[in-house]
Image 1 (cartoon, one colour):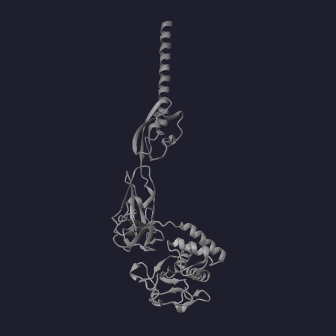
Image 2 (cartoon, rainbow, N blue to C red):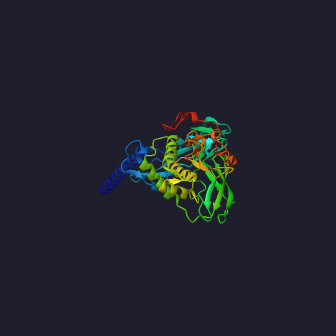
Image 3 (cartoon, one colour):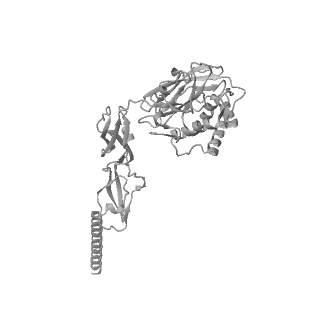
Length: 427
């Protein structure tokens, strides 16, 4: 009886244990199923987006997190990755998709080009941004053979095929005009010295603000006294060119010679001390007062040291006397300081004696004969004489010595020149 009861007890105990185990197993299975249902099996994020655990669950999952080390995943690169999420002692596999659906961005760079000079598409946009490499190209090949205003489309395409099209404004310039060279003139220098080939020369172009200037002095031998051709060429950025050839005359430096800066300092002092002109005056007004001052303040004595213009100017400023060469040299120094283009004119052919005066470029771009010298064969002095004003028996000169760039006034303006008020009507 006792044995039978003992067996029965053991059987009941075993049955109870089995029941508890089955109940626990059912609870665990239910917990895992519920928690697993809260985890998304596949998640898609945009490139460049951080991996956030909360994106993988729809409701809180206790004691959960990434079981996989995600630090090695580069989200800037599209791809699919198998990850594991842990909750409790369980592991749940999931798929992470990194996709690129964002098109590149960029900003148009307005273009100003010459006909036929299409820039690379990559040069027409800036601030291009995308996580992936971007291909930049024209949507269709632009036709820039004709001048005008256009808008051309440039596409930005990343490696995932996302595309942005940008409108780029184009100004196409039809330029066939060569630069203009101003102030070209024959040059004088000394054997063995440095030569300033571009002194007084300016170049302008209708489109290029800085045309390239090239000096061809290959024919020059600075070791001998002679004359040499020098060609100055100006070329704009579209390849249009113009040239002018001047003559370089070299001579042995005389024993008596003054550095031009010494002479210019003397000229500046003369202008300041005698109030020859005001800085706000026009070039015509300044030049008129320079010739008037020289005519009235240099005493004609019929002789001068003509070794060099610097010598003539030095003697003129120092002694206030000399001959026509002195008047020319002092006027040249004052004109140079005032920034007024000028050059020497010599009597040709020489009749009873040499004679020298100035050729001056005025505000209208033309060159006029100006002679401050006293002479018995005319009253006063010459200012802004045109070619047709000259008495060629005393002011004849070699017209061919001045190239086509030197446009000497032909028609008289003397009817507008007032020697009392030092004004020229219309200038």
